[in-house]
Image 1 (cartoon, rainbow, N blue to C red):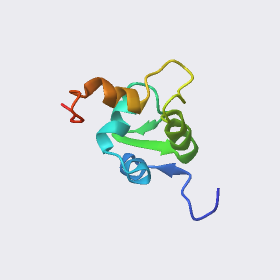
Image 2 (cartoon, rainbow, N blue to C red; image 1 turned 45 degrees about the vertical axis):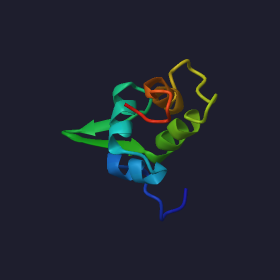
Image 3 (cartoon, one colour; image 1 turned 90 degrees about the vertical axis):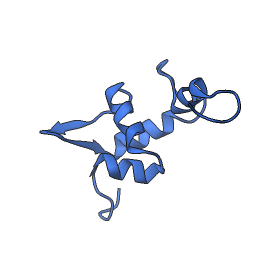
Image 4 (tube, rainbow, N blue to C red; image 1 turned 180 degrees about the vertical axis):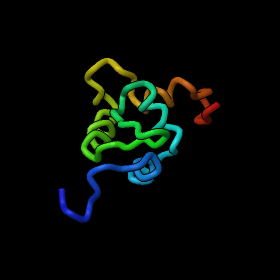
Length: 84
């Protein structure tokens, strides 16, 4: 890790890093798919944990039986490519 990259990230930074919504990050933390530390009301996520979680989201990449982000979206699809 270079000095220009922070060791810990906020939820907003994780969401921006992977171009996803903050809600998805919060849901992953709540489901214990993504490790986070709580300091009062603030969550902080190690960059290495965020990258490992992202790698596990690659279709077929989750090895612990936890549903991937992809399968969670597929489960909410109305079969017309729209999410409800």
